[in-house]
Image 1 (tube, one colour):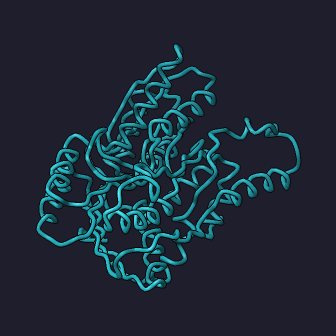
Image 2: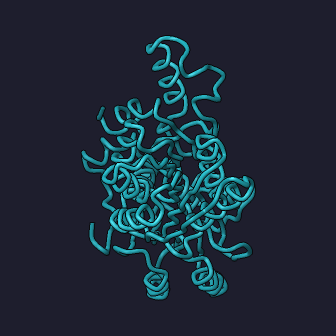
Length: 370
């Protein structure tokens, strides 16, 4: 994927095969395998597999349909910019592409650009937003790279007459004049839920580290805040390191190696994006550490580490729904509608914490892997 990543109109065979991956929407419970009312060591293996499969199948939702809204035009042109070229946003794009195809079936053509840099950068996003002001788009959608830097730019664009929305996992700052947001509205709680699972696993005592992600990215920062506030509740738990890996697997690996070298008795690592659980797990495996890892999302390698018990749990976001709902709401915004009966000011998408017992089924379902 290049720096100028423009999504094609028709899904390729490979992307079509990946729709299930992008659409994972597991029913949020926030409970671990030991909390579902059935002891982990009770029942047969078949019963255990059945419970996990039923939980997964009941939550997966990739059969989306457009609502009854009748668009006012037969052609729309959108611009979307997001934090970084990365498989997570490819999954969001699949939901957009499905909505695009469904609009075409109704005789409505939607074209859009879907742009991001190779490395997360608020400066790069600022440049893109300044440049796009000189072009003709019905709606501009932004996955906010840094809320302090980007939010004032969005306010200025709205004041100048541009129709601006935010999407993905990072909304603008509170009070920003952007019209609406589609995505994760509970990143703080996601961080808290993952950390609570880690604390329970560690019997509420020990040393932990936090890998945040990109500096200023609202979703990463909010998850880290949730993690820190949760750790603060327990007097026998201590945060010994907090590092920013800039959503890079390689940097997360390097940082974890350093943290482990400085703290050989490290008990846990809290990972706040999709890349850093992979980097952390690689480092933990290489060093032979028994540090417990919790993290975010559905990376294939991360799911293998979950299956092997290297990662304890993962919080998986519904990327497909984020993309589908973003495109559908963009049409309504382009027609001049405001949040209310037609769409919410904040459209919330779910996150679910999954555990080792779910990993094999997840891999088979999402990747045809086991």
